[in-house]
Length: 144
Image 1 (cartoon, helix red, strand yellow):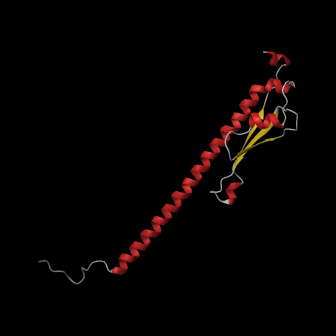
Image 2: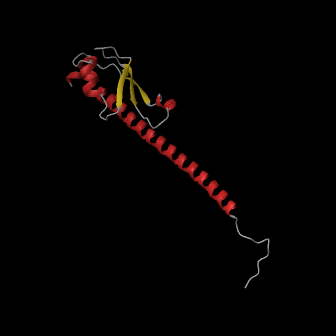
Image 3: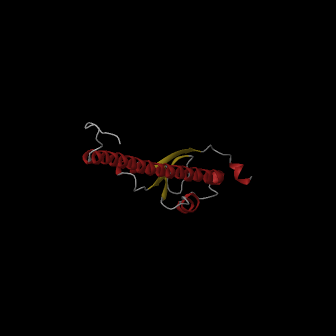
C-alpha cells in the first residue's frame, strides 16, 4: 500500500475540461486550415486546366494560321465557337484584341472559370490570359 501525500492529487475536473476545450479549439483551427488548403488546391487545378485550354486554342489557331492569314478560312464567331471553345464545361474563352471577321497576328486568349468555393475577392482572379503573336506567313504556305 502506498501512501499519498496531500500535495499529490490528480487532475481536477475543471483542469480536464479546460484541457479538452483548448484541444478542441486547436483541432478545429487545424480542420479549417485543411479545408482552405483543399479549396486552394482545387483552384490551382482549375488554373492548370484553364492554361491547358488556352494553349490548346493557340495550337488550333497555329494549325490554321496560314489559311486564316490569307483569307482561305474565315476567322468568325462560328470558327471560334467550334474550333477554339474550351472542351470542358464551366470555362469560357474570350479573344481580346480580335475584331469580328478579321484575323490578327496579335491577340490575347482569356480563359475564365467560376469557383464559388473561393471567396469573392479571389473570384475575379479566376482567369488566365495568354498573349499570342503569330509570324507573317508567306502566301504560298496554304498550298503546302
